[in-house]
Amino acid sequence: MRALLVLLLLLPVAAGQEYYFRDYVIYLSPDTRGNAVEEISFTVVNLGSNISAVEYAMATLPERVQVFDTRGELDFYTEGNTIVVPLRSRLLPGDSQRLRFLFTLSDVTSNYRGDSILTMSYVPEVRVVNFTFVVELPKGSVLVSEQRSAGGTRAAVYPTPEKILTDGEHIIIRWRKWELSPGESFRIFVMYTSAQESKAGYAIALAGVAAGAAFTYAYLRFRRRDRGGEHSRVLKLVLREDEQKIFDLLEEKGEILQEEVVRRTGFSKAKVSKLVRNLEEKGIIRKEPYRKTNRLILKKEFGGKG
Image 1: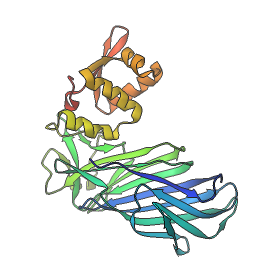
Image 2: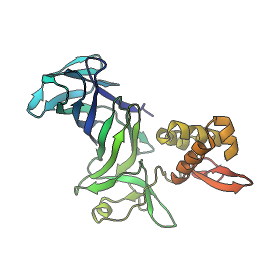
Image 3: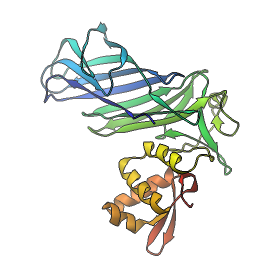
Image 4: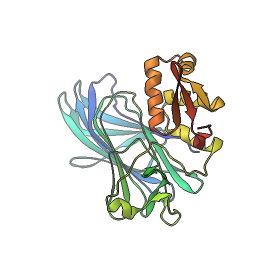
């Protein structure tokens, strides 16, 4: 499994400046070879001293980089894995500037038993207001899913998207969040396959999206044939750190008392209750009342007993 691609932040060159990002949009278009074209646009709102340039730091320097403001293309240079963009004019306190970055990324998807897994994180170092993340799947792709006998289709998309749309050729998934705090990670997970490789009962057909079919979203579902350790390793990609600690405890013996989770993690009872509720909603565990606490049982499809 390839390492997660983590988008770092656009930062003014001079330290200690007061600013935030508004109307931040990430638009990602993976292709069938595992690469992707990414477009990022945002408005820098300056609340402090003058800003003459911005920096865009990434884990790996992308290819075919272009940078634009509202007047056209901007020059830039690189320092290691950082793109440095001098502005046309200094951004004064109270001013704002809309910028757009366009580039190509390599190896953004991984292969899991013939299906494609896209996972990416964005971690801001400053406040972000009105954040949108959009993924446009390759032409003819469908979301891998699991047909439930109780009714409804559960798709391998995390977190629950605001909308799943189509332009007639592509599935488009959109997430929105009003605000991200500095250091708050926003991670997405999408599992999909080509229409030619999908099987009845295991995929959301593009025509179904176009027809406006109702979807019940789950944070993560895999085909029932996927069990055991490999399944669990993929699952961990979409668990938050605190949730993963509980998952690790459950992996040891398949079930655990909720009061023991409190004792072994050091988390408060309120925090454990919230994390347990999250894992229930994601379909990973089952909870049963037991005396004055609850018995938490890892579901069979994740290597447990329930």
